[in-house]
Structure formats: structure tokens, C-alpha cells
Image (cartoon, rainbow over all chains, first blue to last red):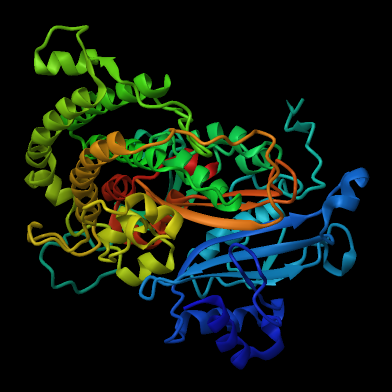
Amino acid sequence: MDIQEIHSILAEEFGDDVGSGPHEAKDPWIEVAPSALAQVAVFLRDDERLQFNHLNDLCGCDYLEPDPKKAAKFGHDPHVEVVYQLSSIELNHRLKLKVVVPRWKDDVEGQLPEVPTVSGVWGIADWHEREAYDLVGILFTGHPNLRRILCPEDWEGHALRKDYDFPLEYHGIRGK
Amino acid sequence: MSMQVEDPRVVEFDVQTDEMLVNMGPQHPSTHGVLRLLLRTDGEIVHECTPHIGYLHRCAEKIGENLATPQWVPYTDRMDYLAAMNMNLGFALAVEKLVDMEVNEKALHLRVFIAELGRVASHLVAMGTYGLDLGTFSPFLYAFREREIILDFFEEVCGARLTCSYVTVGGATHDLPEEIEIPDGLSALLEIDPGRRAPFFEVVEMFLQWLEKRIAEYHTLLTRNQIFISRTAGIGELSREMAISYGCTGPVLRGSGVDYDLRRDGEAIYTRMYEGYDFEIPVAPFADAPPEAVLGDNWCRFYVRMMEVVQAIRLVRQSIPKYQAAEGSHRDAFKMNTKLPKDEVYLETECPRGQMGFYLVGNGTAEPLRARAKSSSFCNLSITDHICRGIPLADIPSIIGSLDVVMGEIDR
């Protein structure tokens, strides 16, 4: 099934929560409002026509150009995305979903943006969301065990944020 | 405190055992690298198994955001260091998808040849170390003896044995050699004079013939060995639904009875490589499985890999005449400073351990805005807690080994 059809099925069910249409790209995607994500996820998995039972990947992506000289050419407003790559084993089709949130909740620096968890829909989302939290700094609300997964638990900051400051010291280990 | 127990085997029923936390790893040999398992045990029985990962985290994704794409290829080697060729291929294809590049026919068949050899090498390690996990040493020596020769081929082809960085954007760094010195390991096995030179593909064929005969030996040593069967069959059962929900891929998924392989079911840019090739995709359950085996257990996962070696050998054989007949160069030019379009792609390929995905976001510069590597072992490992409950402690290495994880790829 192509993305246009998938989008019209979703639009019928969720209206404006799934954006006005698929975004054009090599791998086109559908944008989902954070508030509707949990329901959309369940629908995508359980609907007979879609059967997206396999979450291939979930990752965060930070859009920011910290260098003011290059910011004009950057071409994106600062924001954070969570990207979901889905596929259906039975129907062998693929889908990319995106949830777009501000870099900081309520624009208060240090307050991580919130996205509802899908770990109850696809089991693997549990670990992928922990990784996205650890490296990109996204709070997955409702996650049963949102701890850092790759970095130590007392690590500060989220390494894949574009404005991440590389630590100069960690427990007496010099960073430079 | 007295209890009525009808089971005559229970002799003590007033002894209380405490739960104990046992750390397995990070330096335990059967955790395949630096993996720490925190086990909550009651006597011999494991109630909870929490993997702690990240010991090999090298910030590969952050590094990828600061490098031009061809410069990141060596970092993909170091993810799944047992299947570097396949990792290079997955990444190269993702970049090619992003910049709309189609490699020519010669590079296509060269890639099938080298990727399937890589699969054989990787599965040989999986087989050997699995035997080691279960306490039998000799299959490991045989597996490494054979793998050594494949690594010798890799060395002749690109100069490196493990971290090959051979398949790169646009094709491969070098063409395959015309003639090589027969690797010492192979000439010793075949009892021919050391140092003799022969055409490359002839040497490969000599090796494949040797390897094919050995596979029956491996089956006798492991697959059909009653001790091996007792340690693997019916243990670590992973249901089809669980495997799909937890994103398991590769032999783990097919061992649970899901007929899905990206070489057949993947995206066109990848399946194009395998067009015109004749191969089967081994999927559990197997008709020749021992009666103790159940769908999705350790034995099935192991057997899928063994059968895949046979198929990979077939693919290598088929790729040789296709490569020889193909025209064009082994590599199309891709400049280091090629600007990536403002677009994004995600591509998964079938690596020996499962589906390895690369997500690339281009933004008009040579360096991607986001370079994401989705690891198959990461997903495969995430089910350990669910299949390691209520089993004896001694079965943990058997289950972890059957998942065949590589920590370099999990931690990136």
C-alpha cells in the first residue's frame, strides 16, 4: 500500500492529527500530533488493512545549527523530531512516521520535550525510547522504565543534541 | 512450618532460599563481548534478567554527523566487527539511495560475492562460539580454521581482515584480484605446496568445495549431538508474536517461524542486487529437527544459521560468473565533498545478525545532519528478559549465545 492510501485511511480516522498529507521526500512521511500518537500507533498495528506489526527503528533527531554564521543557510526551524520506521511483515509495506516537538518543553531550556510512549504497542520501543531519551533528550511519557541505556546513569546532557557541550571531566577522567 | 507435599522427590520443605542478585559480565566469556547481565535468582532459577549495555559506546552517531559519508564507512566496520563487509554495504546503499546513485552491474555482483562470503565468515564464528558457550571446544577450532581462510581472501582483496572498509559509496574500493597466493591455511588443508599462486576465483572455488564437505561434520559435532540438543532444543522459546513485537530480525526472527528476509522482501535498491540469483530462505520449523526441538528455540535459531551458510555458498558460486561477465568498473566516482541533498532516507539490509538500518538526513552539506545506525543485535538482545525467566542459570549462556549478539553493534 502506498503512503497516499495509508494517509487517507489515517485521515479518515484521526482527522487533522495526522497532518494535511504525506510529506514529499525519498521516503515520504506522515506527521502525527504528539497528543494522538498513542492511538495512531495502536490503530496502525491493529488495522486489518495496515498491520504495521514491526517497529524497525525509532530515533530522535535534533534540528539546530548552533553556529550563527551558518544558521541562515540551515533551512529548518529549531525543533526535535522522533522518527518511527514501521513495516508490516505480512503485507510487506513500509511507513515512516514523525512526531515534531519543540527542542525544550515550553521553551524553557533544560526542560525535555514530551512524547507519549509506544512501548505498549511495540515491545522494542522500550529500548529504542530509552536510547532516544539518553542521546537526544526526549521524555517518553508513560514509559515503564525510562533510564539511560548507553551512557552511565549519572551522565549529564544528551550527546546527540546539536548544542551539546562535550564534558571536560567525568569522575576524574579528563575529556581532553 | 510444615507443609503437605505429595511429590516424594521433595525432601526439604522448611528451607528458605533468599533471592540473590548475580552479575554476569561484563567480562564473562559467554556474554560475547562486554555485556553485563544482572540476574535475580532464586537458587538455580532465574526470575529476572536485565541486560546492561553501553560499555562499548563510542558515539558513532555523533561522529557520523561530523564526517563526510565515505569517511564514516570505517566506523561501520567497527559496529558489527564480525561482518564488516555487510555493514559497509548497508551504509553504502543508504548513501546511494540518498544521492540517487545506481552502481553498475560489476559492482553489484562484486558486492553479492563479498557480502555472502562475509555472511559465511560471520556464521562460522556464531557456530564456533556457540559450541564454546555450551562447553565444547573443538567446533570453535574448526570454525575459526575455515573462517581464517575467508579472512585471508579479504586481506588479498582489500588489505584488511576484520575492519575491511571495502564496500564503499559507489561500489568497492578495489577490484577483485586476478591471481592470488593460495592462503597457507588452505594449502595445508588441501596438501598442496605452500606459496603456489592461482587465479582468485579458482582458489575461492577450492575453498568452497572444502567448506561444503565440512558442513556435514559440523552437523555431527553439534547439530545432531545429543548433548547439544539437550542444551538447546526446547530452551529459550521465542514466540512468533514476541519476535515481531520486539523487532527481532535475521536468524532470530526466522527461527521463530517468520518467513522474512530483506534479500527477497527488502527495498528495490537492495533486492536489485539479488535479482537473478537462486537461493532459499531457511525458516523454522524444520522437518529434520530433533523431536525435542520446538518452534523458536535455541536449536532452531542455530539451525537457521547453519542452513544460511549453505545458501550463502550457493550465492557466492552464482555471483562469480555474473561478476566475470559484467561490464563496467568496480567503482563509480563519489567525491568526498559531494553535498548531500536536503532529503532523508532509511534503508535496512539483511546482515548476518539481522536487519541493519541506516537513517541519513542530508542538509546541503557533505556531512549528514543525522547519521543513525539501527542495530539488529540491539533489538535481538532486548528480548532476553522475556525468554530468560524461570529457567536454570546454566541455560542463560545457551540463550544469549543463540541470539548471536555483537556488542560493538549494540553500543555503537
